[in-house]
Image 1 (spheres, one colour):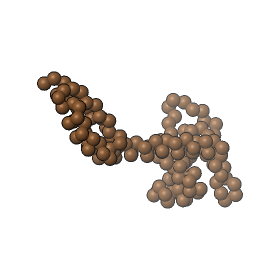
Image 2 (cartoon, rainbow, N blue to C red):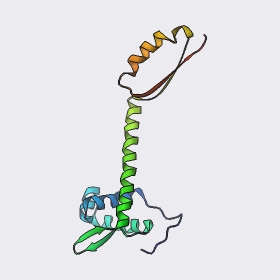
Image 3 (cartoon, rainbow, N blue to C red):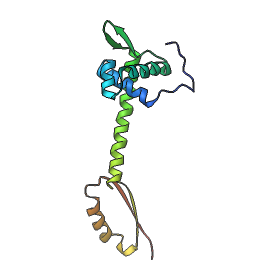
Image 4 (tube, rainbow, N blue to C red):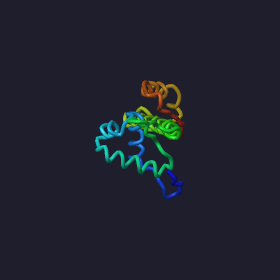
Length: 139
């Protein structure tokens, strides 16, 4: 792969999915089954991926494909990104369920101590990622 990386070259998310499927399944056929596409379609995605990435992902060794060292390094980084995406999905779910966020409350000074804090305590039960700020304000 003699391609050299320029700003116009871009690896698409679908190409990364094909690369990930190949690395985890071991064959283009199994990767195609995982992605619910044809084997030739995965081969095209992987070919384009290698062109865009500028490195060879696998070498053929008999009937098997063997990942290159560059592919193994890239795979490790892809897995890190996917862990980050999993984390973002968790945050989105917590936001949807009102279990993550910021709650800013302005109250009269007379209510800013014991009364409001006792009620907020009940609200915060099971909401470890909700942060509360209580600001006393005159009426």
